[in-house]
Amino acid sequence: MPHSPPAAARRKPLRHKGEEAGRVVEGADRWGSSSRYRLPSGQMAPCYAPPYGALVAIDVNTGDIAWTVPLGVNEGLAELGDIGLKTGTRNMGGSIATASGLVFIGATNDHRFRAFEAKTGS
Image (cartoon, rainbow, N blue to C red; front, side, top):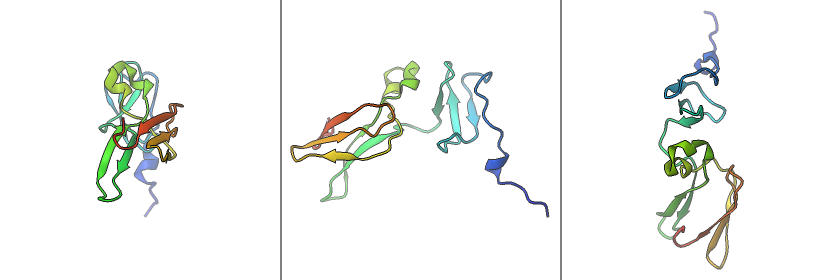
């Protein structure tokens, strides 16, 4: 029986120029997302619901989520308005909590440094 490469290896690479806007594009991107939606500007948006990045606070006494906020500004989705900007972005890194009740984080790929109130996330 001849060897057949896995399905992911048989996929054709995505074309970025000449593809029509407003269609779902199949094929894995460099972050592992398998389906993306092409916006009229040519930007790609994942076909799964945001947030695409979030900061989540856990109550260590109960194990419940105390609060969550989208983390990061996605300027590539600005044409969708305020909703597109506030979808959050990929982030790599952790936060630092201070004794004064602040949480600092700079782990997003939008090159911003943020501070949150530890009790409320505001």
